[in-house]
Length: 160
Image (cartoon, rainbow, N blue to C red):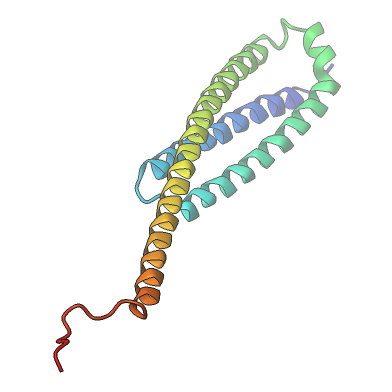
């Protein structure tokens, strides 16, 4: 007979995963707010990315541990469904919640990605506009400087 502690560890692992996914969703929302503000604070955006990376690493570790433990006890869980029915039901609900949160995160990430791409396109346009203005100013300066040697003063008294 399998130790009930193993099943409890599986349940705890899923609950931790839910909490981490909630944090990732909060960070995605924060990134959406950062992108919406002008000017965009890319340092704050990067801090959110770093924290999300840490959360994803924690999720990976939880997944590895869950899979290893489930490989050990999965057969007994399936064979004794009536004995572990409450825990199995709780795990099924948790897995459903995990799937919902993952889907919501993916949708928010896609919106953020489009917003960042739009922001970068806008920045590139502004940089291009600035370069054109600078080129026009430089050309004007060059033409005025170079032309001053060739053009006689217009208001000079030519009587001697």
